[in-house]
Amino acid sequence: MNRQRRFFATLMCIILIVSMIAACSNSNNKLSQATDESSSEATANTDETNVSEESPAPEPQPNDRTKYDPPVTITAALGLKPSDKLRNGDTPEDNPISRWFKDNLGIVTKYKWVVTDSLETKVRLAMTSGEELPDVLYASGTLFEDLVASGKIQSIDEAFEKYATARVKDSYIKNPEIWNSVKREGKIYGLPGISNGIVGATVMWVRQDWLDNLGLKVPTNVEEFTAVLDAFTNQDPDRNNKKDTYGLAIGGNTGYYHPTSNYMADTSFIFGQEQPYLWIKDASGNLQYGSTLPGVKDGLVKLRGWFENGYLSADFGTQDAAKAMADFTSGKAGIAFAPGWSGGWPIGTAVAEAETKNQSVVIKPYPLPSGVKGEVGRQASLPSYGTYVFREGFEHMEAILKYWDTLYGCAIEDPMCPFDKGYGEGYDYVLKDGKPDWKNVPDGVVSLNAYLMLSPSSGTAPTNVMEGPNIYQRVASGQLDSVFEQKLAASNGKLTIDGFSVAYEQIAQDVPSGFYGANTATMKEKWDQLSTLEEQTFLQIIYGKQPPEYFDTFVKQWNDQGGAQITKEVNEAVASMK
Image 1: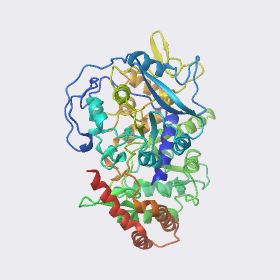
Image 2: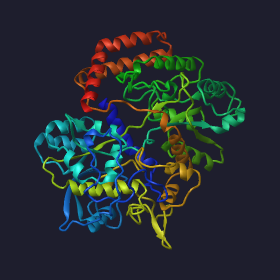
Image 3: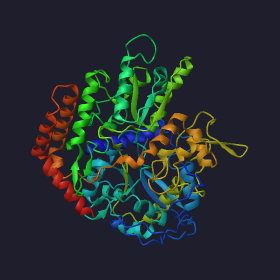
Image 4: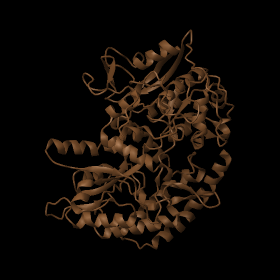
């Protein structure tokens, strides 16, 4: 499971780059709880270790922008990519972001480490050698677990209760499962960023021009979907008088054992609410492993039929996501399931390239059709893609939470956000006649995201904290009233905006995993073996190498070879977190 977590942590960085998600807000949208900045001493008496309680309604507090004097210095670690360039003589410790926090809050960032390769390797070397860690680190997966076990990071329960603002507490109350990723033996060992819920949420991307050529409607259920796949495979949808197309692009080679669930070219919609690879509650409230549920067998049988009829690539099991999406964007396949950000790359770039060649490629995002049991479902985005941990002995958690609250305000559309136009003039915007211009920055737009010491969200508001339409939905409908909406519209292509807008429509049908904790004892020993069995079984059934009934054999083997014990341990771990 940690292998997958590491993959998604890396993917999160990729997503933030290719989609250019703006740090967005809209001052006209109402917050469902406190909208004003709260004082660092929050009035809501929230016990974050019992976050299932109903959210309080904190009274608005005066904006707390008091400045530390003398300044507070916080050390961090910085991992840079070749694209993380600075201008105008700026440095990692002296740039538009760091200057604002120093000048306005008296918070100074010093980088103990600046690396261009693996930051995790640097952290592990320091743990082994006994070198003191920076005050704050970003960690996920096994690195987080090892840091907790090492005793080199502190629990933050008391500091969060004392210093987090009411609105920051409210964001965690409304996303209570987030604490499970960082709670160990009853204590909280990190401050997790909260996903906006649609970062990884798939939508159905369709060659609209193919539908139009064949006089077909957008499919809304699995029967209609199958009919469209047949037409895209057998009725010459591109009108070139050749049988050179197929229906659905799937990237079955994921690198982490999940052939039906990739970050692009995914096919999880077919399983509806019984999603494989997740821990799902049964009728009694206990968790069961999704890959062993009857609906997964039905979905695999449907995929098997599509493969037999030529609706899938003969090589889908060895294709990775990029290759499968290349089949879609090049006109070989007519449908692909991928997140909204893929409307930028690779879909948007392919459409733009076709336009330069005077070719017409019309692709549109649509909601997912229902699966084999008549229910709409998809794997939910992770509630968090990583967490910030703090060195044992670090004494400035108040400053950390003041920094956090400032940036959280930008995510939830606070008109007092100091970065409403962008993170740095001359980097991601310029001013022309006093108005921001995000498209005509000399020498191109440069992101400053890497230079944030902390980042509390995945670009837009966390799930459940705001009322009304998501900012992508507002912008997709043509609403450009605020600087935040204008920035989002200028910083993203139309297909990206439309993709995220469509993704948000079905967020209520997302299927979350019921377990985000550390690997259990038997998981550490058996999970890779069980995952290999799972992957081989799924592919063998789809390819027709094994009959559908072999799924029942797989379920028995999975349980007998450690799965039953893991299920017991997972339920015990979840019970211990309550």
